[in-house]
Image 1 (cartoon, rainbow, N blue to C red):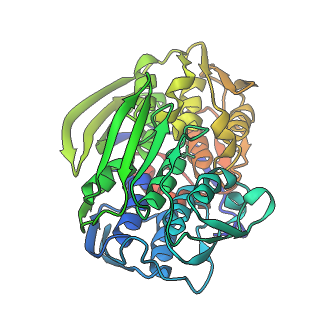
Image 2: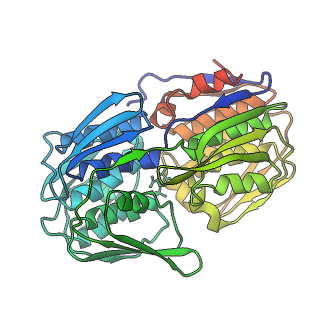
Image 3: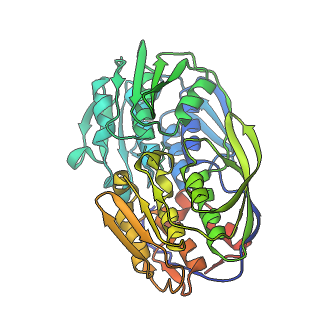
Length: 444
Ligand code: S3P
């Protein structure tokens, strides 16, 4: 996607948000299901796949690498894979659009195949760091034949015909780095080990097990994990059910908390404990949230969440919670703008290298709408005010989550809040505007 045709959008305060909705499938699991399906000989099926632009780019890339990827119904996809190390050299450039996850995971998968492929993306993705993922993959035998400054996209990678298994300790808590190494490790003989100082989302580990790989996960220190993958497994085709994305549920959920009189139920939201930092924080802030029906949905825990408008108070969010809510800070900052007192969000360094410099973009979003906000080092500090907010035009910087967070802010502010470009919302949450309108939101 390009931002050539900007799609401005404005949110206004209206009546309460009410009703019941299911947000689209989890983005992280959707990318992984397509990639693992493509690395498995035989036919896998995926239901509840997120049909957003990011995931479409991954599907297209898997096709270009030789897998048969077909949509057979709404959210239902069939993947006939080529096996570990079996990717074909793609004819053109693999374009990942706005998606860091799709791109970094695919780089890992290609690193274990004896082919050469060129990876590219939009201006936002071209600005994001790739050296972090290339470093371990080069140790495994992949070669970078060309790259832009500092290893960025567009880059051409030659996969290793016989990758080495490595022991890898990611320098930053990142599920993408971990996953890239594990996907490359599938083609290596022996054990590939990833030692995480802080546990990050574990969907790759869970799905690898689901597809028949031998993988063990043990505690490492207080907050970390040691993950050991046996290379060269016989993956078996699988059926994957993708649960609703908690990172997307976060937007209607926070909207319901701050729009007076709201009462919503969000169905079947994934509650994997490595993704629920936001829910925990909102409960600490005094959110009226209930978990209605907890169940297992295809290997992940899901629950229906009931959320009602609440009086919130500011809290301190510790740095160690960041991996479990890394994508949720923009919308948490919006909740904080309506809370009593200060909310201090610590340790947000990684937010600077998301789809935008999300730390700066979040602060700017609030500031132009009258919220008192400061960045101190890697901490974001928001002083809640409740009244007198809005009236600003938010620069979204090609970042879907800044766009959605700003619109949520507008639903509860006295003055409308406009975003310069809502187009990127389609990368992760197709149907966001329609879903929010169906609950009573005024977006136009
Ligand atoms: C993701 C990991 C996170 C997150 C991204 C999805 C994943 O990125 O921000 O939206 O699916 O592995 P990092 O691994 O860079 O923290």
